[in-house]
Amino acid sequence: MKFKNKIMEIAIIVQVDVKPSYIQEFINKTKKSQSETLNEDGCLRYNILQSIEEPNKFTLSEIYKSEEAIEVHRTTQHFLDWRNNVQVMMASPRIGVKHKIV
Image (cartoon, rainbow, N blue to C red; front, side):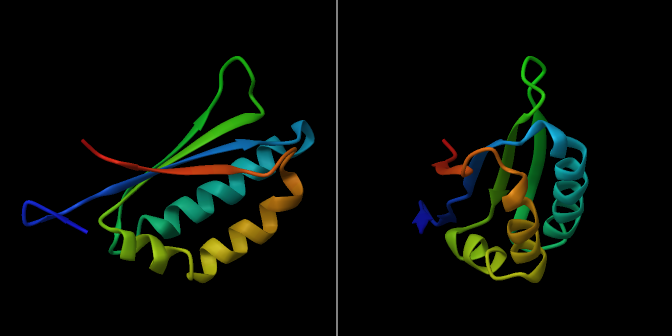
């Protein structure tokens, strides 16, 4: 999608509730995925945030150049591995919401 001849960047904010016994393993797996994702041409930023009040609650903040970059990301082996490996660690399904940057 173009906006005044500029490709619109898209942020994805993902909320993850991790089972307490898996917190460190979730962090390790997510940092590995983060490192590989940041090497993708379409990924501009990827932050892993952990709640201070509730350490088992995480927010993943990802910014991509375009919708197409997100679609490419979702087909990468490192994303598929992360998704499959951390699913068992989640207390509830993750919630991801796309946002436009204004």
